[in-house]
Image 1: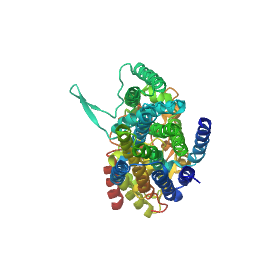
Image 2: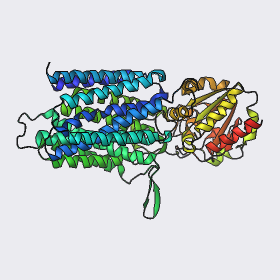
Image 3: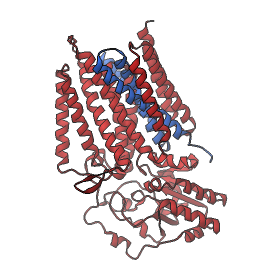
Image 4: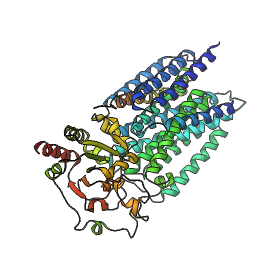
Length: 91
Length: 475
């Protein structure tokens, strides 16, 4: 299992390098906020930890994780959308 | 197909959508759609987790999702474009926080009960320690970074101290090393005794202190590097949590973000001709023996006025505007745009030359100028603008200093030696809008200000452009 996950990890890093090097400098700020939103994928783990019914401590930690990750996801995608809407070809 | 297979296939779909989403950011034309594609991937991942992820209790999940969505929406809609670096800094931190909290919850779930897993799950234990370390460094480093970018200050022994300055603690290298050693030692303890949750929280505490210590000495113009690096950490934290949960979508999404942050970090470092270690641990300052401000400036500075600059614009063909952090501080972007419109109406070509580290985060200047409705095809990268500067009539530098300092090309002993710069000195006339002759972040005088073809317009960025607009309208 571990080797399989490691394989996925290494390949994903290479894919990341390939696609990110093509992002022009003018979009670097929205890239950061957008990738921030994507790193909010931790919300998936947070939801499971909160909802699994494994006691008050795990639920509490999960709840805070859900809040932080959701801020990340919603805030990140929304603020990127706002910024990207401003990039126009002709003024 | 059982529920688990369907869930994993949905996660795969989400991963593919993330990749397509980031690919869309390769061009401003496709970027909005790319961002929405990524958001769709996230929606799929969340929905499928709720439906097929083994969720039994809904109350707290719904509370968490609502609270997070409201805070996220309010932040995203209310932050001004000038506050974007702080916003991104905070979001980096929240990603790290979510990672170490999930890892903490998993520690309780997997190892907290009486039935300690006999197989041990070494991978999960190591990954929990890694999530705790990286996640807490990311959160607390980002909080400090965001505080610096927000220009917070505090009082210490009756003195006002700006958080944004480089705060150098005595013996900080020893402190850093000690803190890192304690953190790694606690990692080992967490891996060996996962049933003792106290080790994990001590690890989080040590990592928090480490995050603060690493970030606090970094100031001003080095902030883009730190923000990009913390961006990378937030991705790595998500990856580590993916190894805790053996979940591919976390690993893939986290690696994409980690790679993205690393690329930006390396671009920022190259744009300053400094290594990452140098940015993080060394202090930038004038070297002994460099010329003093008096030697460089005495008798050679020509101050100018808005009227004089307006006359310069008569009959010119190309004007290049080079913005720096001062543009953001004085919020001059709309005034810049207004002047550009006036000049363009007279048939002048107005371009913008943007240095990779101008501002406080990667792409900072581009976002501000785009906010003022300046079309993105006029925002030129350093190499491109340098090739047209020798055929440029007037170059206007507003709020930038070190990134246009020709010393970088000429003096190998200067602290910015070898840093690629925007060659405004090659333009026929250079106008520098600046409040005083004070040095930039590198702390060295700028001979550009004393060149024969340079005129200094001592003024605040926004006011200078307002005066210029009035003067051009009159002429």
